[in-house]
Image: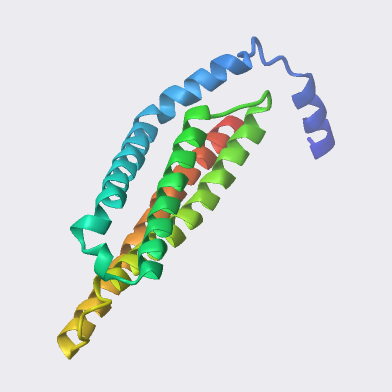
Length: 182
């Protein structure tokens, strides 16, 4: 049997009843509900903690003794991360949209990958702003420099794992797409 004959027979084959798109969406939603729930919970907790920090950092960490530019930089960095988390929550809440399920899964996967990069950059940004804010009036001894180096390594590791978490969600969407196509 050659390839053209196989294609012809495949296209003429009766697949039986097909499932409506809305039922497919419900099945996919059920399959991703648990992992997305944990993901949403993490974003909500992080946003609440950062909001609490943003409200209190000026008074709790003597912001009036720090340069105004550092106060502004830290506020913008933390505020940007909160806004990103809220945008991500909205994006996750909207879920798959459109009539073409494959295109919706590809879009979600691509969006998760993009959001992972943005989340990692914002995390590095607000942690560097915080380290600058915390050490502005500190004399840099060898011990403090070593501590800051260690803190920077931890920040980069956390950014890596944050990006990996987003990529894992993208791979889950791609796995569903693969399952749907095969």
